[in-house]
Image 1 (tube, one colour):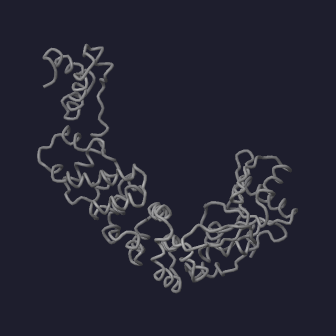
Image 2 (tube, helix red, strand yellow; image 1 turned 180 degrees about the horizontal axis):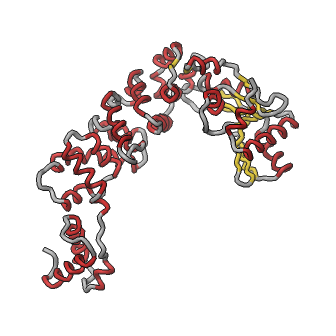
Image 3 (spheres, rainbow, N blue to C red; image 1 turned 30 degrees about the vertical axis):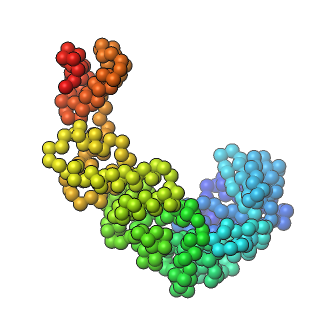
Length: 415
């Protein structure tokens, strides 16, 4: 089967015309252009979208410069990586030279050198990602499938290319799970055996790469599928002894998606860490070198758990609730509102998130000064008292705020 028409229908006409031109320029120089990887996989599955992964069997930088020389456009080259970015008007194409890779040790980033398209496909992770469609004449539209990836697509299997794949790069363990769950496939039996055998190699790839893979889990439409499978296979425990996912995790993630605009990767991570000890939660996010704002979310979640009893106290005024929660990360508050056991506490957190944190006074420091309030600590106290009054419903508009400030001035300040 020829796939040129299928690819053409999946792309904007002007982009397809540019790719066609690039393929023809390549053919005139005895270089071939290929669409490779996930876009080919999704094309065969009838899934739209995805990144264009274009590989040149030859010199990607030279081909991009030739295209620019003959037809205009700009080229940015990256010789170290054998890649080039071609831009003409609103269109941009990223090109990479076909290459081969050698792993000096398990988990190391590979040593890269130029290679054939067959070598380029042989360095990839799974058979379903190791296909290419030629975009240069005379073979334009022909599928290159050296590892029978199409057969595995039809059988709905995730299969590595060789028995040492996870040893070379253990992040493929997490990618196997992610693709399995996203596509509703199954990890092929031998591949599953290699995965279980090579779990210890997760320690070889470094925390930054593992954190990135976990982040990709949490960016999936339904992250709980990948997390539950990773727990089943022992991957989460291999990452951190306290990390786990189960039915509770799935329930919380589904609750997050049912609430408007709260199902973010940050909320998912907070929920994933909700039940483990404060020490282990902080050890995980710091050990995996999460950014300071993510560490803050986890720290605030821990603080909220210590405040839980106080938040449920009867008669808690809005100003008191605001004082307890103001400044805490919204993602931590959201995760806590989903996971805490007390319905009253959940309602209070939602009230703060939906209403109280957005309360503002009309009067600010400048307006208070115009009313005769002197600059200094007293002004700060008055602004706080004014916000408290607004939170508790004692004043509801500009006129009421002005009247209250005038009364305070006459009485020597707020109580």
